[in-house]
Image 1: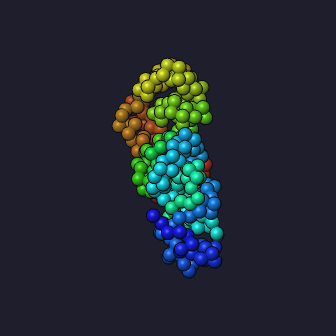
Image 2 (image 1 turned 90 degrees about the vertical axis):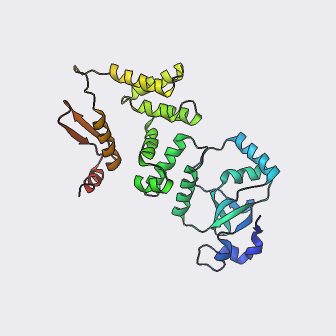
Image 3 (image 1 turned 60 degrees about the horizontal axis):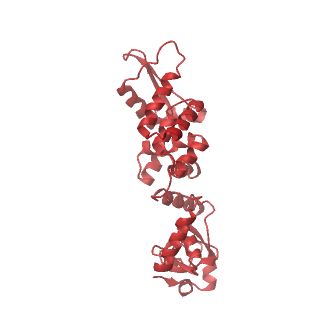
Length: 287
């Protein structure tokens, strides 16, 4: 499928090509080449941290029979190659006893490498919801994307991204249950609808013991919130059009928003912010 690395690069040029402007780069970039496994090393910032052993062995058996069907993607780093995407195929190829793998070569800087690895990771179908949420958060924190940028980059609606990231607020044992598939992300969102951490844990325990589905969990959450009220008066139910307006404000301003109305005729909007920087960000939307 691909040419050997030596057919494209001499031993001297193999070390010297590190950017798209270097001599010989045009022959290397975008070409499928056979790269020795010993010259490849994993990306230290790889988003995926868990590789299922059985799935790797199954892939290794497939590679033994059919070879590596989809080339991995590497970046040139001195005399070696760092993985951008395809670490599972790289690991499985080693298990299969291969000496080299077909690869596309890209010349990218550290930030581009991380962004490519993260975005490629999100597109995978076998990620659990927590792994997806962690990847979104890394793109926001380490690449500096806004949620709007992220939405366009990965092709997901902003509310989808926001709801995904909210799962990271769950207790570690709840997150682990989502990762293992014991409960779903829908269960997690229902748990988050309960404010108290103590009640969240109580609801989680109830889900596990009684094997509640998502709809039953939502009903149990409503019951817990109703039974936890210590106010002399029941909390007014917010009309649906106010709830919709509240959600629109939250998506626009990227902060928690509360709309309070006692009689459905007048009320107030409360915007939560954590620090001066977040306040300035809110104000910038009104300038």
